[in-house]
Every structure is written in C-alpha cells, then in structure tokens.
Length: 382
Ligand SMILES: [Zn+2]
Image 1 (cartoon, rainbow, N blue to C red):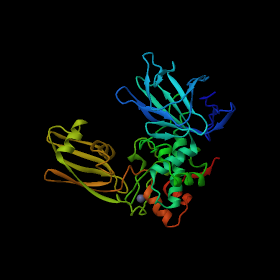
Image 2 (spheres, rainbow, N blue to C red):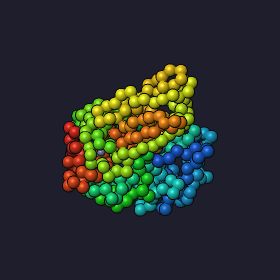
Image 3 (cartoon, rainbow, N blue to C red):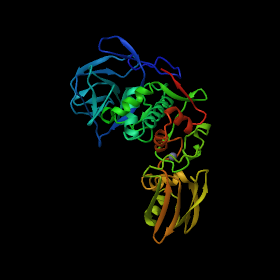
Image 4 (tube, helix red, strand yellow):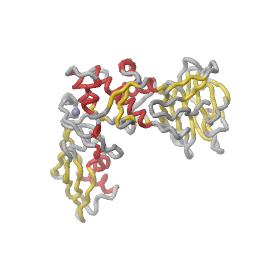
C-alpha cells in the first residue's frame, strides 16, 4: 500500500511506504508540489541511483526499474505519464530512488520520493518528504544562518505547525503545500543547510496547537513596529493567536522602514487592468487603518468616480515586490506616487526579524512563539 493514508488522526499522519527490503515502515510525510511539466515548459527528472517506478494507485504495482538522467516528463495522448521515452501507461506514477540515492527535478535534488501525476494536460511533480527533512529545508530557505539560534528554532516550529495544518488527508493523489511563498519556501536537499537541520532536530516534533487543532502558523518577514490583525490576510482565521501585537524587535530588518516611488502611469495601468480605474487615475488615498497602522481600505480616485479596495488587494495589484507591505502612506507628487512604509509581508502571525531580535535578547524559542501566537499551546507530538 504505497500511497494509502491509513490514519486520519489529527495528531499525526502515517503513511506506509515500501522499502527495498520489502518490509513496510511507518513514516510521516508531507507532499509538496515542486513543479509542473507542460508542453511549453517541460520538467526533467533525473536520479543519482537506480529508480523504482510504481503505479500511483490504491494498490500500487511495481512497473519497472531504470536509470533516469534528465528525462523529459510528458503525457501520452491517452493521458499516461511518460519519462524520457518510457510510457508508463498510468495517469500517476511514483518514483523511488534506490537506497542512498536522490531524485532531481531540473537541477534541484529532493529527499524522499516523487509522485508524477496528471491534472488536465500537465504533469505535476509532487515530492513526498519526511516531515523533519521538510522542516529543515523550509527553515534553510525562510531565514538566514545569521539569525539568532532561538529565532531559527521558532521558525522551525512555525513551519512544522503550518505544514501539519495544511495536510489534506482525503485526497490521495494531491499535494499539501506549494514550494513558494504562497505556502512556505522549500528547495529540497539543494536548499537545505546545516543550521536548518539543527533547528529541526532541536525542536523535533514540537508544534503549536490552538483550539485542539494544529495552528496554521502564519509568519512574514518584518512588521515594522506592530503586527497586523488576521483580517489583513485573506484566509487567516480571526482567532487570538492572530491578533496583532507590538514588536519593536525587528529594527535591524532592512525593511523596517522604506520608501518607494511609482509612476502614476504604472499604478494606473495595474489598477485599470483589474477594473479599479474609470477614466484617468487622479489620486490614491488611505481610507482606513487597523490598529498598528496597516491599511484597511484604499480609495482610488479617478476622473469618472472613485472606488475602494482593501489595502491587501491594492498591494497585490501594484505588486508585492514594489509595495513591501500594506502599512504605508501615499502622496502624489507630479507624475509620481511617493509611498513611505514599514515592514515586509502580510503582517499576520510571527515577525521573522522580530523573532531573531527576541532571540538576541535571550528569549528561547517557546517564549518567542508565545509572544507572537498569543493563546497557542506548544506541544511535542513525537
Ligand atoms: Zn516585528
């Protein structure tokens, strides 16, 4: 039973995977979407060891074993997965490297194994990775080595809790997380560093719980003085751990305070594409703020009327790389908007630079987590 999820306990998810000896072992995995192979942008799979291929079914069958070197992932006319020249005759296959080997998608090496499956006309590559290896990988991508030890450990617990809260038990052939900022940044073994491995090991099995559930522990780079209430992040539940807190511990962040200018023409183009400008763009005004100064509402003044949208939606439309957070002041100056702001990211949950700062003040990871996620419990589940 290669892919069968045999436990629906909320505390842990156990899956059985075959090992080369033939004996099944119980391990905890998360499933991360690491790539999408299409006709126009194909993915390539390789391995530094022989690969065993199984059918991705409830009762998986071995389909073969082979060496894989930069084999193009594609789909046959009948909707079966193809690697290189080999048509496996199934809409989903599981690739497992022989003991000690690793799979690669493009130039990125991954631990665990890879499920290739078809949604529509593309093939998804989903990495099934053991939870602690995943946490080590996320920590390495999400925070730098120079952060304080307990700041990095707090990140490990937040990443583990977030991942556990995303597990989708009911869907056998699916994934739990993406590998970018829309979930948590993860670059497999290629992106894993020793400080990430150590932080995962020192917090092994430690998670945040709230209201008998794993806390979907949101975090972001820098709050600039005050974190944001849950309403600033679509999808964040309005619960105590996501209420805003003061935080002046992120002062060392390069985005604690910032200023950018954007041309009126560029902003008009971005807003008009989404239907928020009628006629020409005249001005932008902040029409409401939350506690801590985060922009709740923005008024877009056009020559033919004005419209309002949330600060968060405004930030997304003009580009999250241009507008680092939704905590800003804006004024028009000639043909430019001058925007002064604080913080980086959505602002809900833990401030990563603040966690680093609290660590430098001697707080341990549990104290840091309790500071940002008020009312959450910290428990070790394995
Ligand atoms: Zn902060």
